[in-house]
Image 1 (cartoon, helix red, strand yellow):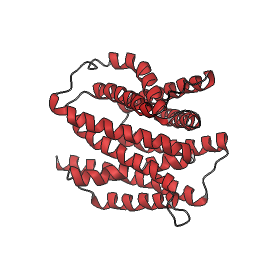
Image 2: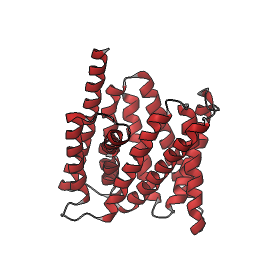
Image 3: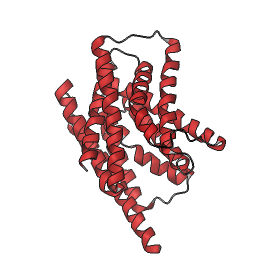
Image 4: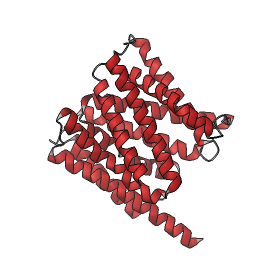
Length: 285
C-alpha cells in the first residue's frame, strides 16, 4: 500500500513536469524523449524479467499495433490537454478511462455491466460534465483529456486480450519503443528543438519519476491484491491538486472540485463492482 501511494505521487509529479515542459517543447518531442529515456531506465528491469525476448505471435501483431496506436494517441492528447488545462482537471478527466473501458467491454467483449457499473457510469460522466462544462458550455480543450481517456480505455481492452498470449514485459518494451518512434514521426512537420540544460534535467527527472512509479506499481501488485490497491490510485488526483496549487497557484473551482470527487467516486464504484463479481464467481465455483 505504501508502494502504491508513493507511485501515485511520483506519477503525478511526472505529469506536473511534463505540463511545465509543454510551454517550450513540442508534444511529439516530449513523447519521444520521455519514452526513450524511460525505456533506457526500464530496460535492465525488463531484461531481468526473463521473458523480454519472447516473440509476439504473428496473429497478435495486429492487436499489438492497435493497442500501441490507441495508447500513442492517448499520450499525445493528454500532453496537449496538459498544456491548456489545470493539472488536476486534466488528470481527473483521464481517470474516466475505466468508465469507457466498461462501455467498450460491454460492446466489444460482451461483458456484463450490472447495476453498480451503470451507477458508476452515471456518476462519472456527471463529474465529466461538471469539469468540461462548468458554465453550461463545453470547452474544446477539456475534450482532449476525455479523448485521451477513450484511447487509454481502448488500449486497455486490447491489453486484456493480448496478455492472454503475449508476455507483459515484451508488450511494455514494444510500447515504449513505439511511442518514442511515433513522437519522432510528428517532428516531420516541425524542427527539432534541443532542450536547454534546465529543460533536459527536468525531462530526465520526469522519466525517472515515471519509471519509478511504474516499477513501484508492479512491486505493489506483486505483494498485495488488486482489490486492496485499486483505490490508492486515486490519491494521484489529490496529489495533482496539491502540485497544481504549489507550482501554478491553481486550485479547482467548486464545480471542477465536485467533478473530481464524482470521477473518483465512480472509479471506486467500478472497483466495488469488480470485487462483487469476483466474489460471486468464487461462490459459483
